[in-house]
Length: 220
Image (cartoon, rainbow, N blue to C red; front, top):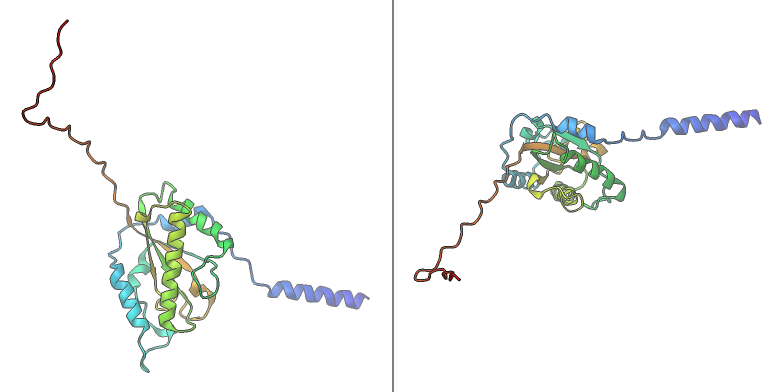
């Protein structure tokens, strides 16, 4: 009996040791701390970068290096204040799983915090190096768009403060492990100061039509 109990305890201990560690909970303070380190606005041409990413993902050449050896397609993004976050999607879709809405909500809370309120943000999607490169770019763009839309529509972040781009597997977060889950993370980047909206001047009073005069008041 004692031998069976000892074996059972050993089995439980082995199971606990082999279980994956639970991801650390994301807090608003963590996000603000990372994204508030803004110094200079990034000179980004997102339409050009999207086209470049799509074109590179279509390359079919024997001389093309493997995913782990490819140069980053947008190295300028690597200098921006960035917060990497695990967002759970349904497999091969841009549908965010319900358990990740709380995480997106914390990102929204951070964006309206006083330290981040003056800034605009770029949401960058990535996919690990599995499947077709071209399809991975499309999926990563749809996932980045999904996070942008949830922030805007569900959490009411101004769309003027949000942009999105998908880099597929063209800029792996961990090139040494191209197929690792870390390469599916979403990145939130601070890119510029938001333009201040200037209040429109009040409309000028309408001029009286020529030939017409205001009626005179009669004295009693």
